[in-house]
Length: 457
Image (cartoon, rainbow, N blue to C red):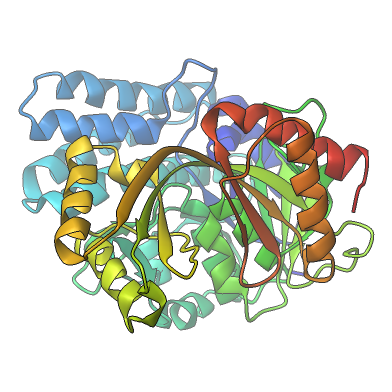
């Protein structure tokens, strides 16, 4: 048995949490590599180190003298950890030198921002490796560059190069426990590239695959992944088993416990992901695997608030006979670099649904409207920016979609919630319900009650 273990920001937020990490690694000889995030929040009003680093970059680029204060805050976080772990504080001086070196020597703003953001994970991995050695474990820090995490920047995101897995495989039989910073890798020019937020989960998946592990353990501050947001529902149903496909759907549509792209490196493997709590590592846990065996008992695995959406509805008589019409509409959004999520249609109309976060600026909405009006001879163009989306996900929907559509429509009708759109996912394992934003909370609670308390499916 061989494992890779990833520890999220809450699991490495302070010295006490790092000691818990150490006990987990000490007590499990199967763990051969650990991936660490930057220190997260120690308390509710705290600031994550990654956010401090982003502030440092912004202050520096704006020629604000407050960048010195941002730098000092970052260094103080690591100094506090090192002191409590009784480590040599000279390592902290090297962290400050590294950040100052980035600011002075990297001229390209894009690469400078990536280098600064990645420092949180890198510094933490160095500290934790030193501490593990101090307590008698055979461990060593290894940078993503030396390990072989190779990336390229494409379509506004860092993409994994397949050669990474062959390079990581060279460490398959390493005797020491590898301590690896998550969240970033290197391009062919030797510059750091970061994944999107939560990207340490992706690093963990890459390492688990490259080292041919059996299990990828992902440690968080929660005992399980839950079927609904624990901040909204009291004691929501825990998820004990979930498929890769279901996890990706939920992660993309609002579940924040596991990064949506982290499943991709494992799709062609039999590696299981075990989500566990750093605070209670022997209790509970959610297993993410290629397939789920309890679909008949649990057809729906989760319900999620997806977020705010805006719809652009175009109406034009005889639209259905005009070849390439929808493509021409989508070309406008592509040109403006706006991702389209859903496209419900009828004979003479089409709605383009996009996340409202992509078009916050009123001028951006106006640009879209002007582009559409100048490109088509419309009978009507309607904009609705009051939409909220709810995602219902589960492999069991494939065989119960008709029943699900009937039940969920009735549930919402009974509480006087109007459905603006209801969209069945192409994979048949998801259902998206769009409603007015004022109805979201009562709709979520009514749907949750129907699914998990009344077991209507």
